[in-house]
Amino acid sequence: MKIGMPIIIFAVTALLIAVAMFNPGSATVQSAAPNPSDAPERAINNFLIHVQQRHWNQAYSELANTDDVSENLLAKNFGGSHGSLRVFSSLQNWDFQPLHRNGNEAQVRVTLHWSTPVGVVNDVHDVKVQDDSGNWKVSWPIAPFPEIATQVLPVNYLRWDLVSASSDKEWGQGNLDSPHVRIVSMNAIEYEGNVTVMGEVLNEDTVPAFVNVAATLVGNNGQDLDEESSFDKMAHVLLPKQVSPYRIDFPGIALSRVKSVRMNAKATLVPASADPVIGVMDQKIQSDPQGHAVLVGKLLNQTGEIVNIPHVIASFYDSNGRVVWVSDGYVNRVLFPQAPQSFSIEIPRSIAGKVQSYHVVVNQYSLNAS
Image (tube, rainbow, N blue to C red; front, side, top):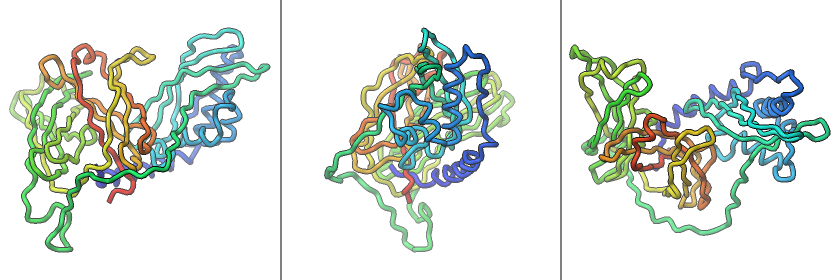
């Protein structure tokens, strides 16, 4: 599915981030450790300062694994490529957690905090540092980019065009009825002192729809407390008979203040296509290095079109089939055709023990969407 409307918001936010990205004085730089015993952390700190400033040559000179990593691969890993989310991100700061040190080798857990158009994104890496004659070097784990073979892929996906009766009418403003959509489930919980409303919405129609789900909290006195929408915690463009999870957060409101929830799903007729088709493979729940429960898997772009920014949304169900959580995550790299790409979505500790099953949908933003 191609989504054009969110890209406008995305581009404006990216522009603001770019201003900060290329103004080193506005960035937060981690301070180098003065103690000689902290030499491994200091080496990583120096490396990341160069990365933050996008001085790829200087950053590359700090690497110990230059036999396995080229300067171009380093730049693509931290600076992004092909319009990926990393292209629109800037490294704000980082944290260290020393794991162990044995003579001239050390291992440090590094958490990178990235500022992106979709919020703060944290990356965790276990990094090996080596002492090379008193000069500590960083072996940063960098995954290679896939090499795509030249091939011909047949195009046979479904597509819906919207034809207006007049050239001066905008999309969705014709004399056609709005698509029929229905909220099929809703669950309101309190999470970390805030009310969260979640569930699933279904496009019951035979035409695609741009859907937005909103919720209004009604207080014990019958007055409206707050109204919020799902924003990016759902797939907005739904093809016929497609289901999307949604999640709506109400910061600062306790569930005890809420008497009822009033739901509203609005749909607009839009042109859409079923391409690119993104498959989800090897899904499983496991623990990450920090002990958090995460849903991991791989995305496979089954078409010949590059997907710039993949967005994974997962709904988690308890033993009764009720939605107990909805979580999402953006993949930093593009999806190249026929090349699997890993994803990971964190599950809150208080929710993980209730999860019996899950369902994943993949949304995507294309820079060339019209």
